[in-house]
Image 1 (cartoon, rainbow, N blue to C red):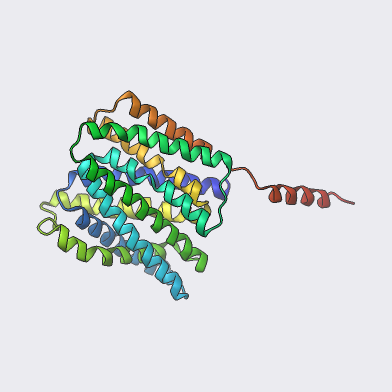
Image 2: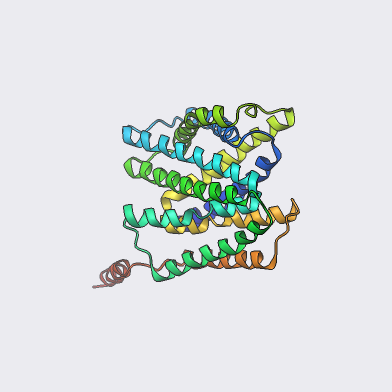
Length: 307
């Protein structure tokens, strides 16, 4: 399996596990900012231990450390806003809104990394946007909290795109071992959550039962360490546009879970949007090889067989 294929597979698996975390958020009765704090704090402890056990060290470049911490700040904001959206519109819709990060990822890739979009990728992005809109639009007719849920969900997507961008900038500055990178991300996120948590979640910071403590531990260990670790490992090996499209597997999984486990009513328009989004993911993964690369391989084969 090629590096790109393995990275794509790891990213999809990570996204599905990541989406399962929305069920825990909906189940545990603490604030969204506090939930983000605990998730990152637990993962920070785990990744620190793993980094020590494997002998991984911090990057020498200070800018790489700063970029890693900034990725954590934006991830913390993403998680907190995503949690607020889950409370307002449910796990499936909130995760779909969060997936609008594809706009921001494509724009960042174009503006800062000179990633030119092919016609096929532009079409796939349009189809993805249309699919997400078809899935989310009926919510406004039935939910008075839809506006707040949509705003926080969309903004969380922007924060996640920023977090992914700083992961890439960290690797571009200096290749960083995965456990150390996740340690930096966790530290940055925890520090960023302290003040908002004390302001917005006063009285809803601590879990109320041993069951809640157990679910929070699972949320931090499995969803953050395993799922986000796979995502962080895969992102540097893929373009930002393709990354954004593959991440749409997360809202599809969350929508199915919301329907089958939580009994959420999903109409034909929403299911059609889900199928359209899957088509967009497929089209977005068909990235043609650049002409220069094809030309190089042609001449390489020519000279290899030249007597």
